[in-house]
Length: 109
Length: 109
DNA sequence: GAGTTGGTTAGTCATGTGGCTAACTATTCA
DNA sequence: TGAATAGTTAGCCACATGACTAACCAACTC
Image (cartoon, rainbow over all chains, first blue to last red; front, side, top):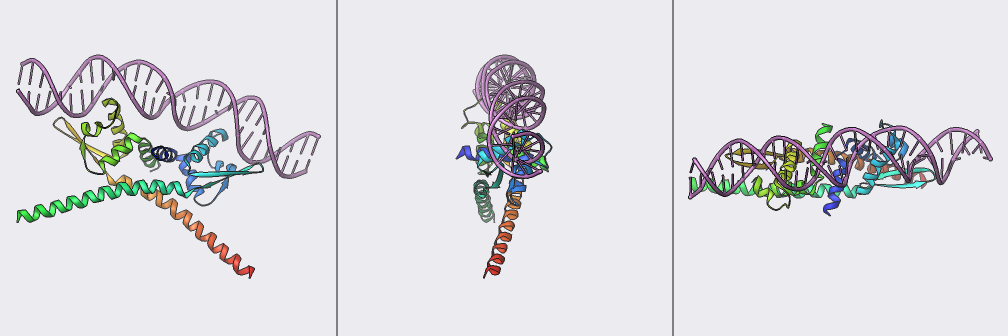
């Protein structure tokens, strides 16, 4: 589980890979089309795609000689869940602080 | 802007640093307390803290010889915004697909 | 004011990451 | 079937990252 978040965050830490995710959230696309806007050699780009797929953020399938890549929303949910947990925790904490402040206020008056 | 997301995702790709964020979302703490549960040399740990602070996820202040670290919720918001944008895009896409499917359905009958 | 505590700086090292080229395989099209 | 297209594999290189130790500074405490 920890490893999964590691991979997801790592995959999204690179602007090229994030751009691919952004492109893919508009719909699936073949490798060559995904590669086109990026000024780097194809093998390099393929390794970025591999990182994304290993992290579970994308899925790909080959038909004929064309490999089509698509996004897998589940992992973005994983990310969002982690984020929500953090936010919940610190909001609870802020609530407790507010409570404490209110109590202080009461004892003061 | 791109650089900011790079740094945030990168910072959170490491389990040690994520653990620190999780700890900090419960409230601020001095360096030594944050370090305690992690089985690594202090200088190593300090560099993790630096990565977090450089990314803007945390803030720290030194009073006397104690440095207190706290979380900066803004950057987690930055993260969430990116996430929401992706989700919106692909939900719109799914909506369009549904619309298309409905149109197909109508022409068929 | 000497020792302890809390943190910092400097420097080293192994490994990981991101980039490349060159050579290769497997489809599709003429 | 021969050429073009779409990916793939292998191997190289520079630099970043994460870990360590050793030495250091600053501020409490006795």
